[in-house]
Image (tube, rainbow, N blue to C red; front, top):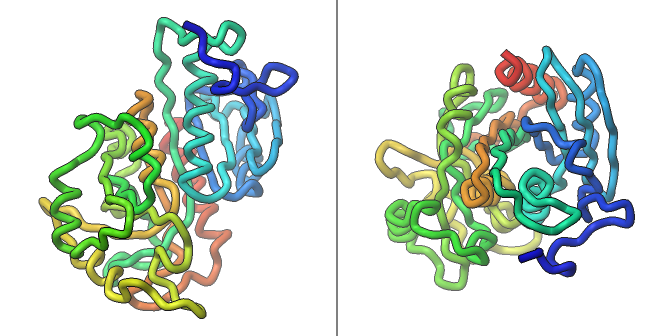
Length: 289
């Protein structure tokens, strides 16, 4: 049965609605970044670029590096934007946009998030790279989907809520694993641990400007959580949504972040651009060799 017109929106030229991409403009290897300006930083390192598409905060460049076709795409910030990006990437790969029918043969994408983040552990220093073994969803995005028991680690979630004395006014936290295949590809030279995905930058990550916090001790509770030798090492705003939707849609996903701040030691890294440049080099080398 065709997908409803109002459920699968398209632009006038037939491209997918938000990303404004045609299926042939998408590579099987996708690097996603939050900042639209980082798209050009990465594609400038390609041997060739075949297309550059821009719509809203979603900039997309597709090209070739070392014989491997790669799409680099900016998502903007937050789980809500990841919801758009992952569903539309999957639609480009696995739905016939003309007939609105799901294709009979599933295509699996490799999706690598390259971003910046803040460490919450004193021994995970600024200037290093965090590799996300799991996404800890402090957002509520995945609860809108039929996630099933194979996607979420319910025992880890129960242990986390017990440890933190979780506030019932907040959405139920969830844990999702990243792609083991991609994690193995990026393990060397990175620090692996759980990444907490917050639905905001200030209060949800324990920052105080003019507003107080509902639970001033929450960051310390998150920092001290342990489960089967796993611990939370950093905060950001996309990974849980990326891992959850990637798992449900059948794609391989991983997040690697440059750590530009440490919340435990109050340190910051002085040259963000140089650090993210080193991370981009690492990701491209691992992806194309």
